[in-house]
Image (cartoon, rainbow, N blue to C red; front, top):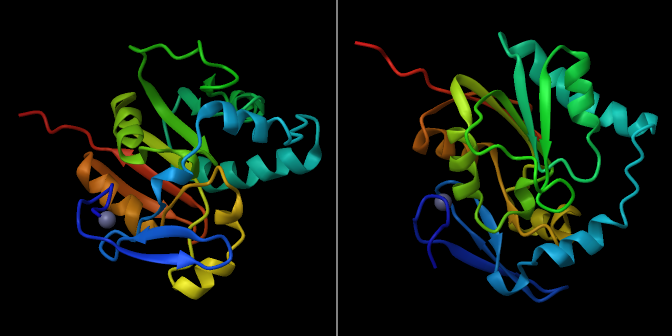
Length: 217
Ligand SMILES: [Zn+2]
């Protein structure tokens, strides 16, 4: 088996509790479940519908505020944004608008018709999306294509504990719709592949990258 990010050979381990096989790449530190555990969108929708994401809920706002507190101080000259995989709620987009950033919200399940193929953004945010993706490398690339040169990509997904035994005890992979897992190093690798600079991470669940500006001769 090859790593879906960097194409190196991966090793595997089994979580004895669930009998699920995981593949781990020691090069880019990407971990992914065996593909029979990948879920389609209708399955995922059933699970999301159980989440009560009330936009007025103070906790939900505080949750996005922590993300914005990481991102906003590190970016400049951002006027347009896309929230990719926003879910049912457009709360994060509304919060960006309060910071004078016009934000579109796209979600394959709840807001599927809002993606303009030709539009480019100064900022793309995507929170709690990447752990659901069957093809995160391809999605990462497609997002970088939607960025202006010098545009920012800010992602939130929990970084996995690198130790196998700690991973097995970790709550995050127990959600059946969470199928792939990242470390900061995985995003550093993706940044290198797709001409981005890796600006920062919070050591836990947030990364900020920037699409390189092509040198004009
Ligand atoms: Zn890899």
